[in-house]
Image 1 (cartoon, chains in turn orange, brown):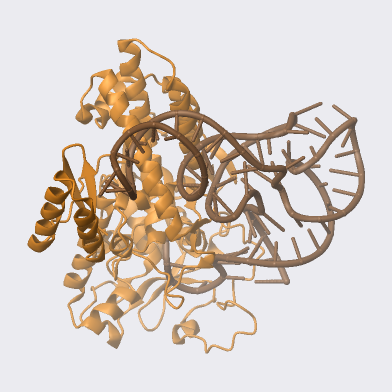
Image 2 (image 1 turned 45 degrees about the vertical axis):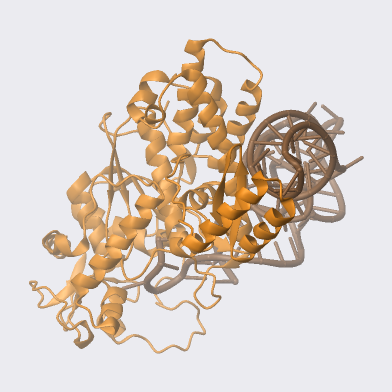
Length: 479
RNA sequence: GGUGAGGUAGCCAAGUGGUAAGGCCGGAGUCUGCAAAACUCCUAUACGCGGGUUCGAUUCCCGCCCUCACCUCCA
């Protein structure tokens, strides 16, 4: 059974099947590496990851390509501000992005091409477009795509009737028109190649039109086609990319190849924070580090970000992290119980091959959750069904073989959602004096000097540590 | 102004033409010197407003109110 998604192109839910019948070719617009990714960025990548995991655990391989935008206005500006060479600057943020992605249990893409690594392909694409009369070079050495030459322009974003020739957000916008506005034949035309400017410093490449750098939209066309072919199965990104980015990608690509570009489009809604748009000025732009500094784990964030449908704006709140933490704890308990009664290892529980081998195609008892997932990637629906199913199987006694199947069926859903129920718990080691106090309290407790024990507990609490008594011992926990 | 999405219990969030999943919170109990954890159980007459269609609408249609997003480089 194929996984379906809401396809922006047809505005309807479509089964996403590989054109070649073997491998799903999936391209995602990756991050612009000029700073840490915020939770909004991460949500999009996370849901793409859930989609890929769902497809793969259903038995279909995915060729997942996600680019790194390592040259554009922002990367150049910020690296200049920092006085760091562009390459070094973007490498650092790329590494940070990898760290965050890994922490969030996102599978690494099959390939992760960088824009600066594919200048030649981009120049070739421009040459093709000029040859075919879809692009023109300006006096200054920039190259623009002639939107009017591409009849289908606006199909994806449905803005054929829109006013797209002004180049301004609103008619009463008094902003002065950008200098290169005068270079274009039409305000709707967009840059394929940007002539070198002083601010660009040593960031430039030689081209048939002189020194310059590629325009933003171009890299995705060049790299997706280089890695996945002129036509591929699915292309994804945040909703904001529908126009102009994806619209322009289609125009550039199809004008050159005369073949359909992406067969389906997968867009993720934005998230809001505490009911407001996430923005720097509101001070509500969270990164993974911010979340962790508040005492939550990456999995808590992952749970929150998958707890709303991808086409729905998610209202992120700190409170929701608490809910996630507790819900995850319950899932972990259930997983432990299922793993134990099934007599399988924890490794097997997280091993995709073991899961595919040992779980029914429809996920057996968990079929309702699986159904939710493959039907337009309804992650909150799936989560709801998981809990409901868990509640129901509580009472039913099942034979050993059934238990095994049950555990792997559960594992299938958990794997698709990408939830690591057993993250390494990095326990902060308590300082010497804290440990001493805790030990003292334990001794006091043992000789039933409860007044003393409670006083010490209070003291430890004030120092920011809680004592959790166990059967025959105790643990210290920060916070 | 144009286009699109949405308004479901204290919070988050699915879903449906026949009176509505799930999670969190909350409450009770077991356990525990205390605290926590864990386990069990429980709770709420929640579907923005007004019309219409229908035997019946939260679900379809119309109008209104409100929120949010996009409209040239923001996932």
